[in-house]
View (spheres, rainbow, N blue to C red):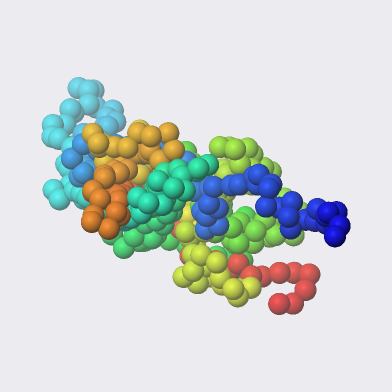
Length: 322
């Protein structure tokens, strides 16, 4: 009886079992750069309420007078009138609860901390929701609160966004406009129109990204300005809106609002303004629960801080039919 043993060649399936595989954290495909919250200036609140006091427009006794009378000009007396019922913005809460099995945390937390990864993904979802609410909220959302005289529609009957439309928007927000905001498909539609006219827009680099500009104003993409009510339309055609915004409290522009929290989570990976992360405890089944809350809103300090181009068509092409 032979003592010889036949050795099989090492194949890929056997080698795979001993390989130390490079791993990545969970990849969240729906996360966007969220440029809006980078370009928009924010103000932290202590009470959760922000009152926008405004002056009543029109002539007042303090208007400057010119007089040619020999005795000199008459000095008026009076005061500047304020609006009696100024608008108050109350912060909106966006919340979620994350449950993590402590057994999973104990056994499977290498090389990535399972609890940390779950919290990070939850925070990313809350931030996405925050950007959408700033634009679309029925109460404080920017689209809903543009003053009527600053609502425009495309000059062309087919709805293509043109340089002329963008110039009209600038005429409505001419005091130091900060940025345009549009769905990526609207950005592409405007760039096509500029190229067709022989005026391709220049680009600029801001916050690590490259943006096209018009009259020196960056055109910032955001899929929270929906096309036909959705972020990722399947149809090649569709209608959307484009915003032009002046931001900053000192410029009487548009500002984001958040709550200053004493218990705000300050960890490097999941910290952020207006974010509260609270540990709720562990139940009898070993589930650890965390309550995540994000307090946010937005305020338009002056009517001329924002304009909107409505019913913009994103699916018009020139070289071939749809």
